[in-house]
Image (tube, rainbow, N blue to C red; front, side, top):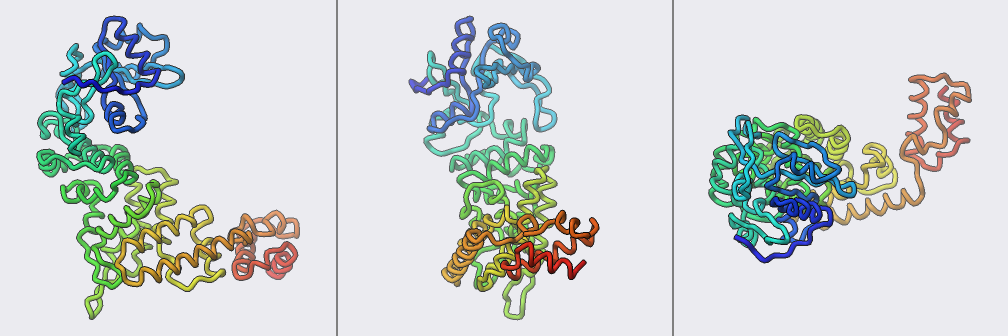
Amino acid sequence: MNFDVRINLPEGAKLIIDTIQAAGYEAYAVGGCVRDSLLGRDPHDWDITTSAKPEQVKALFSRTIDTGLQHGTVTVMRDRVGYEVTTYRIDGTYEDSRHPREVAFTSDLEEDLKRRDFTINAMAYNEEKGLIDLFGGMDDMKAGIIRCVGKPAERFGEDALRILRAIRFSAQLGYQIDGGAREEIRRLAPALKKISAERIQAELVKMMVSPHPEYLREAYYLGVTRVFLPEFDRAMETQQHHPHHAYSVGEHTLRALQEVRDDKVLRLTMLFHDIGKPDTMTVDEEGITHFHGHASLGADMAQNILRRLKFDNDTINMVSRLVLYHDYGTDLDPSMKRIRRMVNKLGEDLFPAVFEVRYADIRAQSDYLRREKIERLENWKQLYARMLEEKQCVSLKTLAVSGTDLIAAGMKPGKELGGVLQNLLELVLEDPDCNTAEKLMAQARKLM
């Protein structure tokens, strides 16, 4: 069906479409860029589909890159921006739950659109024909539904990653997954074992930073997390009987995700902050559950899970550190000495994030003592602000003496020198007034 809808094509995409059409071929913007434009969002990429063969596209433009000729894709460069131009195609048999064994080019736009995953991603547009919506994508957008093009069993059977994509789009758009698609996701979820960790990671991150990270609950109900994140399933099935908590570990986690801003490291931290609880749970004589040591175990588990999903080392390091210290010290009475030691332990780079993590954690707990917890956290923030204002030393990099100074005073490089520097830092953490070259060198001479 054609719709008289106007989409503002970027100049590069418009020029490419116009050039291909002037040569006698069809060309349309297609997929996610059309969907996002209709939703009033700025598309990240503009993909173009055409009846022209790859070699015909290449002949029309001076700067092209052979992105995937076997699948009909050529990247056309315009003003340093790449536009993927792909020939209409029909996918052959999928043998690995991810890629078609072969593709066949076609001159029929409908054949190309009906191989796509969801109706909201199967719309095409150009200024001459308007919006081409053959499978009810506009209606599904209005209804807030993620629905497969054609039979869900075929779409998910072709590419198992579409299982995660359905949940991710649902979380990004706040849409519900169509009932038939849900049933096939539940049935075919084990096929995700064939998908690479890198692909799963990418979908998980997009879900986590979406407006609805709590839709991970749907992935649990449909048996999806059981395949790639079974630790979360255990959290969902671990109850908390304690005045400070009103939900299971998993439900608390989902609520905490909603309470923190959409930053990758913060959302992953909230996903894993209590992941160690199922394995540390004890129950006292009164039936109260306790989770002593869960932060330490959780940090190790987060590290292992993130490695399993092929995250980069920086993300692994930051998330595991925040999980380890997510509730460290902030339940104690605030003091300048404690704040210095807390910053020293976690690191100056990450410490501000602890406040965001703690706020989210508290807001996802029960109402019990919530006001008092928030007030105490605010007091900690005030002390931290004062520490920064007074430029108090909390690490070796701002210590008034360095290893070079100690060597100049006659100390030999090596382990002993490092020990002396650490000793001097301990002195300053206790009393910031000691952070002068004169006082520290006097102390160092006693230790040399």
